[in-house]
Image (cartoon, rainbow, N blue to C red; front, top):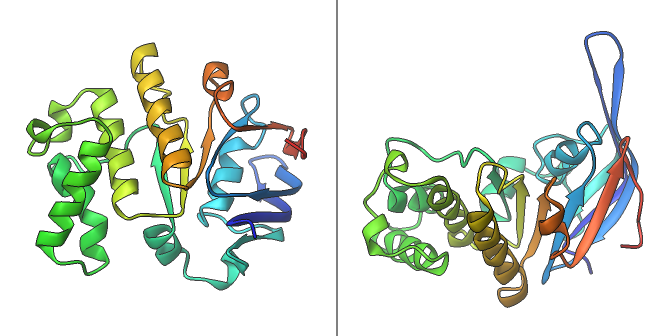
Length: 224
């Protein structure tokens, strides 16, 4: 069974002058062990779809299912905390916390002991290619690529089945974009996670296992 499924999902909201139909009757099943790239022009519904998959928004029609359970019937904060991590283009790190503390934070919310949380955080930070020298650094003392690796390490540490990334390389140069893509592919293939990323970068899409193209809120290649 697919880990995450969209069933005839539509989402509309009231814009300034008219109702906006951001996603229209979209159906797709996502599996673990693969990296999915969601592409399309600005306004095509990419970020809205990611928000629906993350439970940040609920469909106005249809349903999103995680392991067969609708996001409309679950505690979506708990869903993101335990099962579906979201990685943002802007990193969303706490500026007053060190890299290690940022990765530990969701583990402490899960009531994990501080020592165990620190050990798991250090393992995750090492896995994304950062060394012990980065542990005590604050985000302001990290490069953009390093901050994004810390954000990915935070998602890795909580061992979510699903990782959702919104333009994770949008603020990075070509070298760091390639490194982040390598990390995300490794997470999908070697750790059997479902990784779904929104991107405008066709070089990233070319490396994905599957590419989903959205156009005007509709999925153009449902058999991808």
